[in-house]
Image (cartoon, rainbow, N blue to C red; front, side):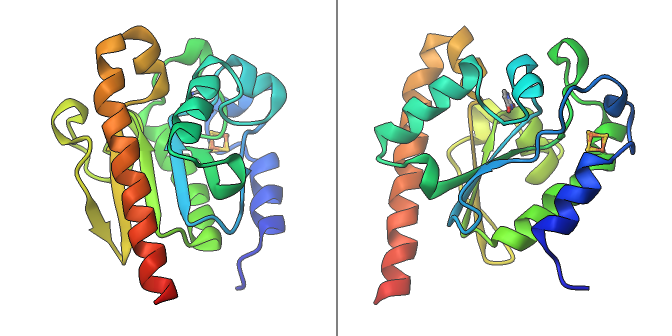
Length: 190
Ligand code: URA
Ligand code: SF4
């Protein structure tokens, strides 16, 4: 069957596939450009995101905006989503069964957007998308390739808010991401 945003949104807004549905105010699907070349994937909605129904609108989101603008990316250039679409209570890590229940929605989003690059923000996204044993401190900043899509992980903006020393490596990752995007676009245009 043809994939559409209407189908995805309908399914997500009514979803009760995991216990996170019981505590949510809003399902948080994603924001940004649905034709973006680059997709950022976080962990799950926090309090502000749950209240507003939009990803990355709280403190972590403000830092993410800064990280994007530092490499001249605007919200219109990217699409942003999370591994789980409903807020885990108290911002705990999403459980395995919750991630399993939700991951097909993210796959569906990926199929609709068909980005050239995926950026995993933090350990939860990286262990879910790249490799279950992914070590963020060791493996961030490295490129992986899957079905023609280039995948990289960097620190979650919330981790940068807790630990200033992570800002420099995260900045280097953002520059590598910008470079890869320019290269891939160059290939397309030439
Ligand atoms: N942290 C996340 O991982 N996702 C959000 O949407 C907000 C904060
Ligand atoms: Fe459904 Fe995902 Fe929300 Fe769980 S987190 S209820 S699987 S949309």
